[in-house]
Structure formats: C-alpha cells, structure tokens
Length: 470
Ligand SMILES: C[S@@+](CC[C@H](N)C(=O)[O-])C[C@H]1O[C@@H](n2cnc3c(N)ncnc32)[C@H](O)[C@@H]1O
Ligand code: SF4
Figure: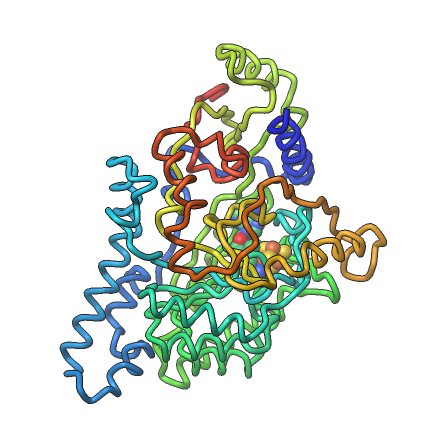
C-alpha cells in the first residue's frame, strides 16, 4: 500500500515532466555509450589531469613541504589519481560480484572515492526538464563553517574528488572559490563543478582559476538561441544565450592569458527532442573553445502510460501482463527513434560503492538520484534536523502563492516516511554506518525494490530493459 502511494507520487512527478515532452530520450543497454563527446586535444579528462599534474594545486600545495622529494610526490599522487579513476568502475563491480554488501568497507572500499557538497541548493534558472520544477528544493546556501568542516573530514578520509554542487547552482554561493581553494590546500586532487554559467563573470572566472578548480562542466541546452532560451529560462530575470556563451568563452580566454591548464572544460547538453536536432550546431558553437563537448541522456523513469499512443499502451500492457509482479506503473522508456522498452528487473547501483552526497544542511545521501532527500544515511550537522523541513515548506508556499521566481515551478513535497536517528556523526562512520550497509546488502542480494527510494529510481542504468516496440 505504502509503496503504491509512493509510486503514485513519483508518477505524478514524472508525468508532469513527461507532459513537457521530454520523454523521448536515451537508450538503454549501456548508458555510457549514449553519452557522446568531441574532445579538442584527443586527451580524455583523466589523461589531461595526469598530463598536467604538475599544475594541480593539491600537488603544488603538498610539494611545499620540503621534507618530501617533489618528483616522488608527483609520481605518488599521479598513481593515486589513476587508482581512484580505476576504482570508480572496479570497486562497485567487485562488490557486486563478491556480494560484499554489509562488509563492503572492511573488504573493498575503505573510504568514499568522491563527495558531492551542495554549496547552493538555490538555482537561478527553471530548466523545464530539471527535477527542481516538480520536487521542492530549498532556496538556500550552505553555511561556510559546515562546508569547511566537510572538506576537513573528506581530506582526512583521503577522498580523491569533491564536486561542489548537487541540486542547485554553485556559482550562487559567493564563497565558492574560497571553498575550492581550501579543498586544494587540503590535498583534494580533483575539484569539480557543474554550472549553468549565468553568474560566471570575468571576476568569478578569474577567482575560480586562481582557486585551482580542476574541472568545470557547463550545462548548455541547445545549439540556437531559440532553443537555449526556451530550455534554460531565468527564474528571477531573463537568461540569454548570448550572455552565457560570452561567459563561457571568457573563462577560456582568461585561462590562456593566465597560462593556466585548469580548469579542464566540458560542456554538456541534455538530449531532448528539441536539442537532439541541434547537436551539430551545439558542437560547432563550442568545439573551438571547450576541451570536451558532450551530449548526455535525459533522465526520468517514465511510468505514466498516458503519454504513450494507444498502440504503445496496448503493446506495453501485453508485456507487463506476462508477469504478475508487475502492474501498470512500471518504468518504461522510449528512445529517439521511437523504440519502446519496459523495465524487466533491476541492476545494483554503482553509486552506493563510490560516493556520498551532502545537502546544504548536512544531510548525507548515497546517490544523486535522491533529489527529494528522502533516504538520509546520516547527519553531519544538527542543522540537518534542527529546522526540520522549513526550507522545503517555504518554497512550496512561495510556489503556491506564485511569488516572483516561483511562477514556473509546480512543486510537491518529497516523502519523509523514511527516518533515521537524529544524531550528528562523522563522515567516516556514515560511510560505514548501518543505514548504507543495509542498502548495499539489499542491492548485492538483488532486493533493490525493497528500498523505497531505489524502487522508484530514475537512473536508467539500474534497470534491465525489455523491448516492447522496436
Ligand atoms: C542539476 S544540475 C546542477 C548544476 C547546475 N545548476 C547546472 O545546470 O549545471 C546538474 C546537471 O544535471 C543536468 N540535468 C538536469 N535535469 C536533468 C535530467 N532530467 N536529465 C539529465 N540531466 C539533467 C543538468 O543539465 C546539469 O548538467
Ligand atoms: S540550472 Fe541546473 S539546477 Fe538549475 S534548473 Fe537548470 S539544470 Fe536544474
């Protein structure tokens, strides 16, 4: 009953998104193969990082310690970086093969490989395909002392990478460059942000370069002004193609002027019906200016069959009926060629073995798809529970009242049925805590749907897909 109700909420959300006509994305078997990219200098991001490691500010900071031989340090850090990238794929595979769920930390992955810190939950855009438009997301910033505390704990744990964003726009935090500089001084080898670049002024770009940001991933949807302005509208003021394009080019120009290798630049466009048609224009716009120009698959779980044609619904129901466990609310997906697939079993998630994410108020999560913060695995600060969900209630109220900046949002409160003890813990203990251990165990045993948040996951990679109409 409970699960059915949760599913209903999810389907409402996904169908809202689907009604916006963003259903037809992606393909199925191997999501990575769907993500295409054009690279400027034939080096992958990882090769680029290794090639220019001497300019990595974590290395430069540590090499000031005269007790260490700089060459040895450089080689050690490069080896550690390669190991981290290799482990990204290998550790989840090993865990799943060996069914190392509860005992994952003792046997395989002693610490998270990367951490995402939500420096800003607020965002200045209202991209219609983004979960922000349907799931309440607080319009709030992280407190600097919490950000520093998390970076300290991450450095102590030897975390290799920190991404300074999750659900919002990181450039909205005025102290972002300071957080990055601090992380680099603490030896974090790879710092990253995803950004919409609306606030990437010349000054901000300079601060980010000076801070030692390693990777900047721009989000830019469309190859023309018409499509971009439609898909990336401003919440509080008009957002325009030309300005953002200029901001992005400015950072590249400044990098050249400053003779800085970093940040490595990537730009990505989410493939929807609109953007798909403009793939070539998008590549042409950026291939001269950006290290890696990529398209990524659109993410949503599907589920509201009313977005499908009668024939598609009929065919899908035939497949669904073959298994009494399934009902009408199964996940489905359509690719850009119109092929239709339905879920047929689950695949264990890799994220629970790779990373953790911390929301702006110190709640810790195991996966970036838990957009509603429904399944916390620990708390790093009492801010996580002191104020309850006030910030969520606030945005819900503002959207109901159609306040300035909330007109385009149609929000629902995420589920709060899953609860854990309200106590502050260290990152290390959360990584090996019973909450995440339980999830890992269920995944390796194939009982993924017994975790409510996983049962309704939007990640295509965690489903087996069965063709319905191809
Ligand atoms: C949620 S945003 C947060 C960072 C920043 N505001 C931005 O736009 O880059 C992170 C990334 O998620 C992507 N994204 C948002 N909604 C998506 C969806 N439904 N499917 C796939 N990617 C999505 C954005 O395009 C962006 O690249
Ligand atoms: S800018 Fe990023 S976080 Fe903001 S609405 Fe768009 S995709 Fe979502």
